[in-house]
Image 1: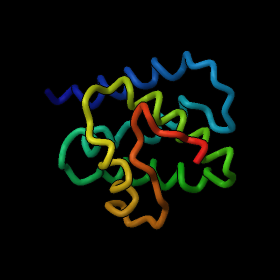
Image 2 (image 1 turned 90 degrees about the vertical axis):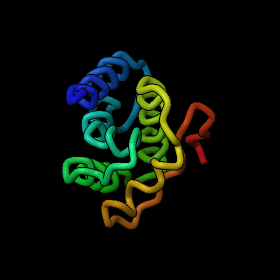
Image 3 (image 1 turned 30 degrees about the vertical axis):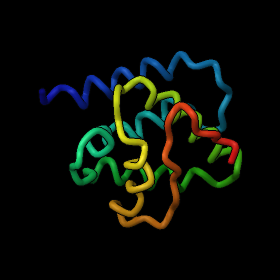
Length: 114
């Protein structure tokens, strides 16, 4: 199933490119940056360099509270389309990539305004 991560990434991009939410950073961009992290989110693999680069890019672009809220909303919507995953893997991403940012465990009940 080598094509599973690619299929998940494509599904997320299609799902979020049709989103009507107005965001400071587009959901398509957020999903593009985080798509390489699907293996990490779904399994116990170490994050790839592409995943860590994407997380760093999003961290660099999350300058305001609105940016962080918008990114969280995009992730929340996108992650709802990848199937069963452990939301506790999301906060582990920055540390696994050597970054100091904080991410909440994101699932359908996450309040992105906090």
